[in-house]
Length: 398
Figure 1 (cartoon, rainbow, N blue to C red):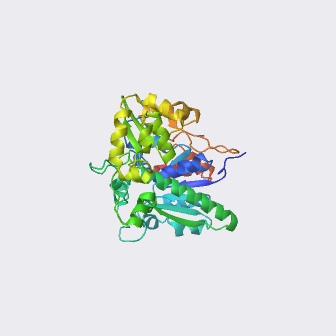
Figure 2: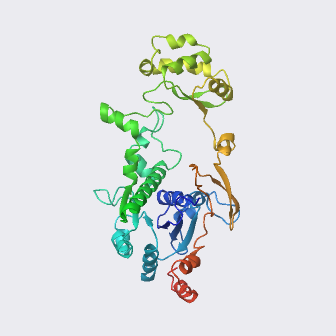
Figure 3: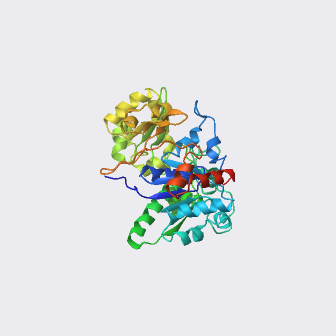
C-alpha cells in the first residue's frame, strides 16, 4: 500500500525544533516536505554544535529532525522570493511556520495571502506564547517556556534548584501536537474541501502537558513541589541506588507492594500499619523509603532487575545513552537506523516510533544539504527554466 501521506506536500518555513520535528513526522508518513531555508545560512541548528559529523561538518542537532525533507533556499525579503513561496503554496497542502507573530503577514506570506492562492491550504503557525495577548511578542524558546509554563518548577530534587529536562520537551510536545492537528485538519478537508489556520503555542502545549500536576493544584489549591525521581501520590515510585547503579522502582498498587517486599525478603513490611496501603505509604513516605533503600543497596542493579521482572514488578535501569542504543529491545524495534548522507557518509539516526499494520513510515531521504534541492524543486514543481533559475541565483533570491 502507499504511504499514509503520499501525495501530500508540506511547505515547511519553520526553524530549529518544534516545527521541524512536526515536519519530519509528516515526512516519515510519506509527505513531500519542502524545507525553506535562508540562502547561505539555513536553519540555525545547522551550526548548533559540537558534535558535528567527521565528514561534511553536519551538526548532530540538525540531522536529528530533518530527514525526509528537500531543502530549497529562498530570500523572503525579496519580491521574487515571496513569489516563489506563493507559487509553492499554490501547489501544497500544508504550510508550517514558526515566525514571531505578524512576521509572515509583513512578508506577504501569511495565512490570508496564501489562502488567496490556495483556498484549501492548511496553515499551521507555531509561536512561543500565542499570536495575541500581552505576551505575544515575547521570544518563544523552549528553555524559557518550560520555565514559564510550570515544567521546570516541578523538575529537580526537593531541596535543590529547579532544573530543565534533559531534552527540549516543550518543543518536542508542540511538534507532536502540531502533527496531530495537521492530520485532523487534513481529514476534515477531505470531507469539506475547506482549509484552515491552526494556531499552536509552546506555552499552551506546556500548560496542557502538566497533566496530573496541574490537576492536583487545581483540585487541592496546593502548589506542587519538586520530587526528583519520586511521585507525589505513589510510594514507592522512584529511583533507588543499588550496589553499582541506579534503578527505577514503580510499585503502583498494594498487591504489587506485597510482591515487592517478598522479593526484597521483607514480606512483613507489607503488613506494617504504616505501609499497608498506598495512602499510608504516601503519608509515611520517608519511613518507607528508609526501610527499602538499604536493602536495595545489597545487590547490583541488574540482579534486582532480573528478580523484579521475574515477578512482573515494574522496574527499569536508569540507562546512559550508550546503554539505550545497545539495548536488545530498542534494536529489535528498529529505533536505531542508518542512512547514507551525501557528505557525511553513513549517519546513524533514531528510528521511527510508530508502526502501522498496512502502511509503512519510512526514512526515504537523509537530512538535506543547504539548498540541495533548489533547482530540482523550482524546475519540477514550478516549471522554472534553467535560465530563470540562474537569474534568481545571480540576484540573491535563491
